[in-house]
Length: 382
Image (cartoon, rainbow, N blue to C red):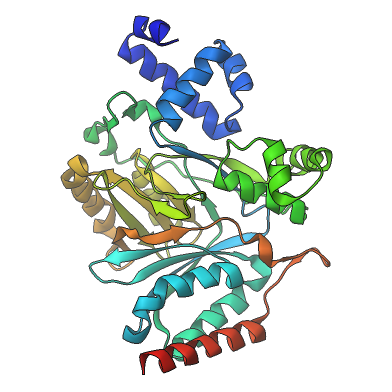
């Protein structure tokens, strides 16, 4: 196989890898199907997948369709009080278990946290009130809390990435256009699902390479039953929106129980725009998506983008951000993210009440738990 690849030019190898990545983001690591669509030998596609994707540290993860699961994205900026700062990571991790937090990152140099939650639509009001109560109790200052109608991970723009050298190639002049096509992302209808479906999604969100037989063993369910759920519910109902090629290199190794980072490769920024009219939303989203460095985004009346800029492009990136923000002063801002002070989690499957087939949110119980936590921390710090 290596001899065969040597006969191909580097350009050919990169083109074939980019084609592979495009299909990976659509259907996941189904190598036989990808080979069929590309008209290539399975052995060649499998070799390229292992050599250029997996061996280079790119995790491949299923991305839930949160909207089909009835969830909205809520993004908060919180600043923990001094006595709670050392416990911030533990507190936010507990919020994943108890109240739908799916990731958080610390900002530099402010030391605040950008916190994401995927909250069932019917509980967004209660969630917002709960966070405000925690803020009133002094755990943190709630600087901002914004709702978004949709969330997605845009496909990796592999045509701009050299898989041989691990470097990006992008013509910044191609981004400096003034026409803005209206970006319309329609909200899908809510689908039916159950706890088994969520467990399957959780496993594939951790690692999309897991075979179904391994997933069946992990979640303790009969293989035939699991395969039926995977086909008729997860796949046929579109509960997975697509697959993320984690080109940023930030991932959690569940075997080592450790967060792994690719240090000094990217400068990661969060761009947040609030209360946008149609034109401004169209402009900001169009300008942002001309870049191949958008790792995640969310939209609606507000707009959010998580951007990973290669360090050797940072001057061009900051100038481009200035052009995006120039006509929306006060409505758009960005945060520099500390890559070593954040965590991402899988979907909050534990909060789905299987008996009544509904998402749960018990405000009174949550308030009691966190009030007790606040008291324990205060006693500990004296």
